[in-house]
Length: 154
Image 1 (cartoon, helix red, strand yellow):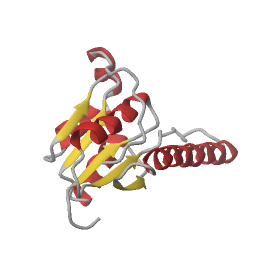
Image 2 (tube, rainbow, N blue to C red):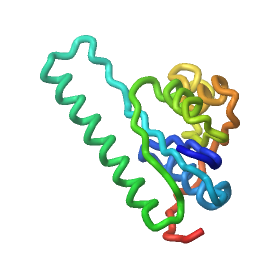
Image 3 (cartoon, rainbow, N blue to C red):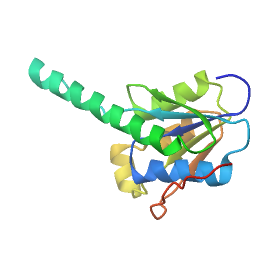
Image 4 (cartoon, helix red, strand yellow):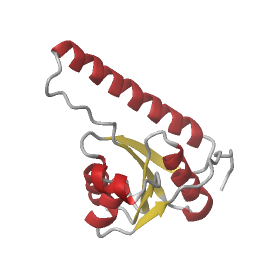
């Protein structure tokens, strides 16, 4: 991505990432921005899986990633924003930070599921990882009511 501010928005098809994107469009976007939507598919544990099951899970991951990309591409096609979609594999927090740093992002935006401290402690949190592992400013979009992207021109 060439000149201009690069803003990374982590997307996974959830209402939380939808709200982060909506917040970017409504309140953060400025002319000249380069929006980078980053999707990191859910990881599966293939340790004891047969080759057939592994193949099936990989195909499901690819299908889901394609659906996520199409959903966001369709939503943004009528909105005046320069964007690209990037699909990466691995631990979501690590990959979001890695992509943001590679792209020299000015801002990273992530949605928050709003889990309690116990669940975050046990399962970890993508947003928590991103906040604590990058020097790039991070905007955490906390739980909000579901929002619809409107076809708007900026």
